Amino acid sequence: MKRLSFAMILLAACGSSEPAETDEPTTETDSGGEAEAGAGEHEHTHGRHQHGHHGQGHDHDFSDVERFAAIFDDPERDEWQKPDEVVALLELEAGQAVADLGAGTGYFLSRLSAAVGPEGRVLALDVEPNMVAHMEERIAAEELANTEARVVPTDGPGLEPASVDAILIVDTWHHVGEREAYAEKLFAALKPGGAVFVVDFTRDAPHGPPAEMRLSPLQVAEELAPAGFEISTLEETLPHQYVVRATKPAE
Image (cartoon, rainbow, N blue to C red; front, top):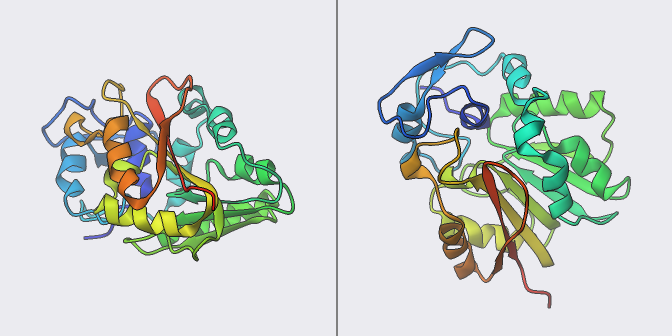
């Protein structure tokens, strides 16, 4: 069986799966004519995920990344994802380093690149090599000189200690296995005063994972806090998601 990438996760987020209440395995056809996993398979694969972009699932070829990019980068996504607002919540400064963990096709990269400026650094991280290759092409085409795409392992972010100021995790945290252990690796990767930003689906969002897989902001906080983070839930206007900030105390 071939591994699932962030593509499969975000496909549900973009409305190409059954609603969260559906527990039976279903398929739907996206605009490219490909039958995709519904909520039932999303649930089935969850227990085997070590990271949100890697697990057991139906046999699927992700080599045709452009097909998925047409879904993930559809301008209509902007209406509910509100990427400018999400990036603004990070409060990035010129010259800082930020990691997009589970970057997929690179939806947030141009905004993150602009936020940290030419002297800053953006790391686009995903476990799926085809997605990383796609992001490398996107980075070159959009001339994002301060941005680098990397394949990372399934059990950690693959970041050096104290190497980044912020880590953005969108629609992925509920798929990470052993989340408390993973949080410790995120904590180590941050510079003092840096923060992780978890953006994930609310309980009543009309799309996303099955209801039983969704995490409340309190659950996310309880998973991140043992690593040493200071936790806050941010005010935002996202219609279907919340944002939890986990800050590494300044020394």
